[in-house]
Amino acid sequence: MSICELPKAGLNLLVSGCDAFENCNVSQSWSAQLPSLPPSTQQQLRFAPAGAPASNASFITFGALLSLAPIGSAYYGYSRGMKGSLELFERLVQERGGLLVNGTRRPFRFAIVSDESRLDLTTNATAHAIRGLGADFMLGGFSSGFTNYAARQSYADKTIMLATTAATPSVISQNNLTFGVLPPSPRYIKTAVEAIVDAADACDSRLDRCWRGMPPRCRGATCRESLKAGFIAARTKFTSVMCSLGAGVTQEAGVPVALNSSGLPLITTVAPAFSVGISQEYIDDIKEALQPLRDEGVTLLVGCTYLGTGKGLMLALQQLGWAPLAVVTTATLSEGRIHAELRSTAPLALSWAAEYTVEPMVWHPSLSGRGTWSNLTSIEFTRQFQRANGGELVSYIGAAAFAASCSLADAIERAGSLETDEVAAALNSATLFEFFSNLTYNKDGQADEDMMVLQFQPGRVDETVVAGVANGRTVENLPIDLRHAKWGRRAVAGPDALPAANLGATGVRAAAAPRGPQGGRKYRGDPVLGPRPLRYGRRVRLHGRVPRR
Image (cartoon, rainbow, N blue to C red; front, top):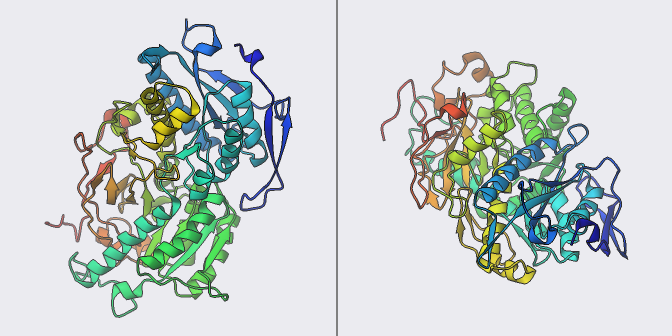
């Protein structure tokens, strides 16, 4: 069947009237035609291997939603990383001669449709990928907010969707044909808060040299008692739900939460920003949103952020001169685009302000362990991505898109079929170890892996994995040091004039590198990766000396 012969009729879901938190109205109607897309919308049947059979019926086609317009698309930067990873996956499948289905290698391709970073186009783009370009399966685009609606359309078209970057539980659990490779969003906050609580407990028991030199700035009888959490969220589906659910897991971890006048957890909000190109006006908005949290005596500040909001939060704290005992961000330190900010001296560049936060994450480029289906390690994947993309750094977003493709391919090959029910059953029973994570899905179809914690060590421009679980192995948890310097002292002293453990608001100590179930050596730098050696297991220096264990 040629693409022109594909059935266009189907149930069209139309999105409109979206509010600031990505809540929209959805109408539906059966139509003989595909829903409309702007004439400029890019639609691509990509990467068909030369000499492949001409019959479309012989291909296995993965549909993918990306924001392909470089101007006017808020998610273009994220989509670049996803697209580069999909190209690597397609090349891998080509080298194997296709996907193996019931003993036969089948040629493979992607059907990519741009959603233009517009919520009102996400269901339309999904329908075009499935009924217009013949996608057998779908990969979700960027964010929980967009995947929330794209997954509804794919379900209406009886098509499995693997969400690549959606972590909001309700997005994945809404139907039985949607799966997600990121863990549930509350786990992000739980992982970071538990690491901070462990640090406070260790500080109180004097197990981590906390009382040497300068004592911690804990206000209560103990550092643990000094912790009081407050939340600031970017107004998107992922970040707002994360902070709302995160307040509960924070209380479960034994940390009291600041309350608003209604007796509910105090969560302030700001508009989202998705790139590092933020303005002073935007930073001022964040400063205004921070003031109620500061007034309530918050000492553990949790930011549910994307890249631009996370950067703005750090700079706002710096300008306010407010250094809580611990600061958490999400989807910021783990973004490859942040690294140039740490080397820049331009106005509003992040520079050493990144030392004042920690971040939970599911993947890091330095993880060891070889993927079962891909046969790649994280280091090999990172090298290949950089070679193919002009040295560009790959973030967890690109790695997640690749992992979702591997998980779907593995399920197809184990099922020996392209039938929706059989592939869905294979996904539900998956126990796939990949370099990205252990891909096992819970009863709602969401990956159930643990997470780790990242921090930029003081004076360095590469992030370090410092706590948590990576690729099924526990990272040695050397606790977060709560005795950080205030902003003014850090700015005057510079990175080399103070003991390193005193510099960050959290001062996470690094730990030994985990080893995946199939082994792998610690990564200490690579000529392909250039000026950014990915450091795993670097111990902080205290008073100019590396502490003995």
